[in-house]
Length: 212
Image (tube, rainbow, N blue to C red; front, side, top):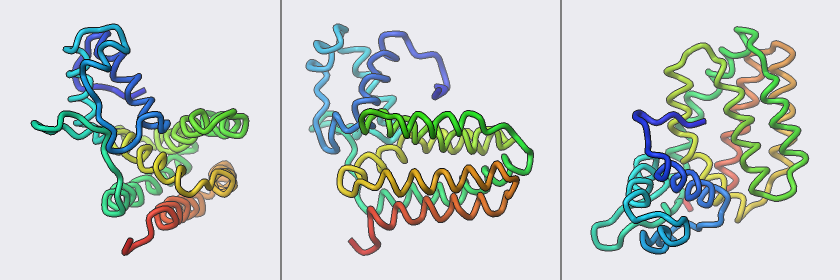
């Protein structure tokens, strides 16, 4: 669960989670306008919680706010995708290495893989994929490192959602997930970290080749 720096009113949180879910599952497409009045009517709230939710999503990198155009879903280009995934490459394999070295439990990662395999639609599979990666880094023993990856989580999911629409590669990623988890469960910290690094790097390069 994402942790906000300060409490968010329940109506704002409701709108925030609903809009975020729609963005990350592809129901709201990159560049699509987010009209406050329309969203307020859709969710049965005033425009104030909608406005606050959109501001929060803008801070998380999922929405772009413009004084003249209003709010839109953030678009994803090659530069943005590589910037987000470059940070993941720097942080996530090291976090997994520490998780394995500490012999932390990885039951949540295994459960996420099972949910992904059983998913009936891309939205459920995407959510399970996010949970899998978080389950690998969350027990790393460094709350600041885990928090930095949590802050990047929504933008990484947006990149993934756009990529999967263009280049569906669920089966390959599922195989790579199983390999990563198998190495981690074997206690091979360096091998698991390398496999995760290769998994992240190959995904972004396949979906957003350099120079395009």
